[in-house]
Every structure is written in structure tokens, then in C-alpha cells.
Length: 288
Image (cartoon, rainbow, N blue to C red; front, top):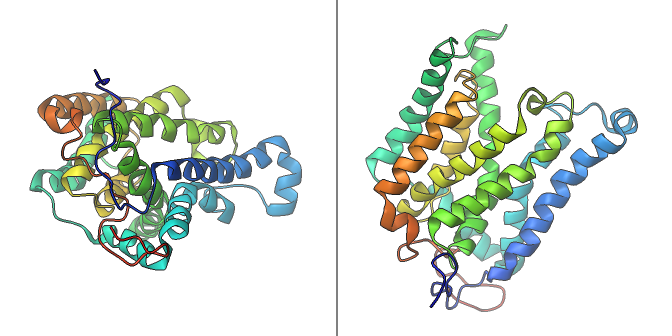
């Protein structure tokens, strides 16, 4: 009898992205990020003198953050060519899903941060910087093009591939573990926000968030827009620091959602397994 976690793949006949593509995806993702951060860890003075001190605004910090998205982009391009890549990127335009997921992203996540902050005696919103609301708006816009780009890889490629073999809950868990470990070198660096945080709560938070994104991803038929907006809300500078209570609240929600959506979370029947969602002329001549 097949294992409840690992089973034969869902049908992917004609899919131009093989499951083995996850290997180069992970290799590129970790090599780029850990390579950049490792350079600053191994030779901080030399790296800073040649490349400049690493900070949240440094171009290499952006590259390190974008590496999952860049890896997904490259892998899809190599396997499917430009036509397949365009089809892949059209998943950013998928917005239809049930209303409650939109409410959760737009209102629920901010309320989690506000509640967590208030419970630990903090403010309702993050304190305004010297530049006021304009500075917050500029930073929020920058954040929209920082962390959310990761989703081209995590949800764009890794989630569909994993869901060919395991139920969505376990796919989300695996991504969460990978996502958390991918961040690890940043916790040893000075000059970036991670130096102020503890790794274990952050790691558990990554697993929790990856599980929470999973039903949104599948219900929206593989949308990249919703996971990207979800990710953006997590780093939106308007919301106050609520650690570690935000992780506790989100973990409770993840548990409730997993029970509420039990069949969808623990069955691959309706899970999204295709990276490129529609028929296009591929470089190899395959159609999907």
C-alpha cells in the first residue's frame, strides 16, 4: 500500500517541466544566496571594501533575496523557452479565488500583526520614520519588488512539482523548511534586519506561512499574484513588530485552516501540479 505522504505522481503527461527540475532550482537558489552572504561572512572586511557594506539597500542583497525567483525564471526558460516563460509569468495575472482569501490577505494579516503588537504592549501601527508617510509608501513599494519575487520560485515551481508526489500540506511544510534554512546565513550578518531576530521562531514562522499560503495557491488555480501579495503583507512597513506573538497567532490559524480544509490539504486530487499552466509551443516541441 502506498504511503499517505508519498504516492505516485499526479498526471503530468506532456508537462514540459520534469520533477527533476527541482534540483537545479534548489542548487541555483542556495548557491546564489549562500554564496553572496557567505562571502560577507568569510571575508567581511574584504567584501565590504570591494563591494561595499552589505545592507538592505545593497544590490547584492536584492540578488540574494531574489534568488528563488531568478532560479524559477531560469529553469522555466531553459525547459520551455520564451513561449513557456510567458505562459508561466501569466500566472501573475490569475486573481480569481474565494472572497475570504482576499479578505485574509488584505485585512487578516494586518490584524494579526496589530493584535500581536497590542498583546505585547506595542503600537497599533509601526512608528513613522523621519520621512513620514511618504517614506513608508516608498519603502512599501520597494518591498513589493523584494520578497514577493521569491514566489516565482517557491510557489511558481517548487509547490507544483512537490504536489505531484505529496499532499499540499506536506508540500507546504517541505517548502517552509527549505525557505527557513535558506535564510539561515542572514542571521549571522550585521547590517541586515535578521541580526535582530531569533532563528528558531523565524524558522517555525516560515513553515507556518508556507502551510497557510498552500490553500490560497491551490484555490486560485496556481496564481502567483496572491502568494506575492501575501508575502508583501508579511514585510509591509506599516505593520508593527509583533514577534513572537504573530507566529503563535499564525500557527493557530494554520492549524484551523488545515482542519477546516482537511480534504484539500491532505489529498492531491485538486492540487496544482503544472508549472506552465496552458498550451504553448515549447522549445522541445512538447505541448501541455
